[in-house]
Length: 445
Image (tube, rainbow, N blue to C red; front, side, top):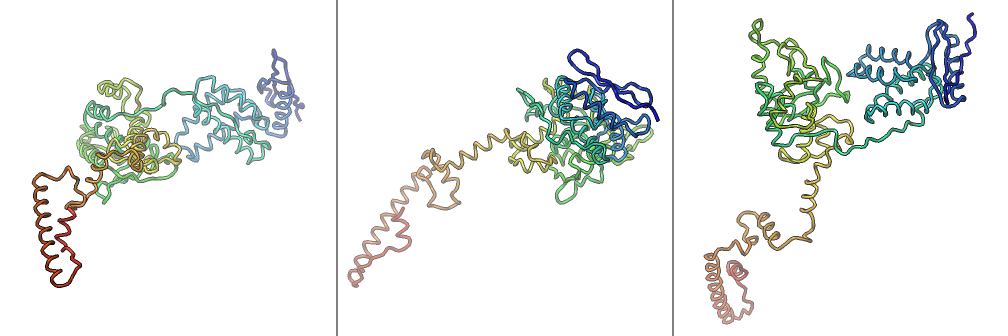
């Protein structure tokens, strides 16, 4: 049996550094702490974690995290494992928390991790991504009985992003037309389709021809995959996106040009072995990070006169903004836009709510109960509501001079006829002289 491991606590300035010698002889630092009590807790937890374990297998967050990420990759749990690998490498593995025994991690250590990421000027969303990775490792350790106290149990406070402008943008109607006019060849149809459907870049790149139904009663596409080759969507569910007239025309034009677009000397009829809706020229998957070449995209924006930061993903924001604001016609509700975009939570769609302000103002004006309605507005509204041929809804201004004279003549005739009938009624003893229906209409007019 090897020598008993006790670890050491060294004073470094105003802090306390913990180190432990592993069975392999490696001297492993476990981080620096503000108080000796905290450092002592880490030392004891590290000894407990190492006792009875095979040589070299230390139950630290870093070691368990790598194994956890490997297991997720093998089981295809996430769509973009490389992004999580990058977050782990740059924000967790490089932090002292990675060297700590997972049993020793407490809420204060998570707060230190949050502070270190914030100091890099990164967003609140990035902090959430990193904490979700650490949380996943801790929960896996709890299931294996390696951790008894969950450091996430009390929650981890996150700083709020302070912004003066939205981090996303959308193209106005003139800018949409400028983008279309600034691109060349079949790519124009790709842009038009993306803008009209609001597909994510990964969904566009992973769309297969078998999921395109242009001749259905209601033309539609089925979004089954969120990333190439066949990774699940962001929500984990497939959805149907019905095509408006512009999207339908763009897809028809793209498919008509596809054989020529993918043609080469070796494949004069075009090449699309994966049966993709939007393949590269050689028939392969497009890169969702760069659906088209970055230089080509920048050139299109320059020709379109868009100088601000505008990403390919902002075509999706353009679609949502146009639907909510009524830029393309009927104003869509946030719930309708949520279904089109594939959001799992209406809170995500709420980012477009401010674009519906004009619609709310118009609705309020239309239902103000007539409190501020002028006579002209009332007359105009009555004329608009009146069914054709309904004389009771004709305004005074709508009556021509000729109509006035005709009405006057009819009124005079009705009065004479009524007087004559009254004389006759008196002669016959009937004192209840009632006008006929035509006479009544003339008198009421």
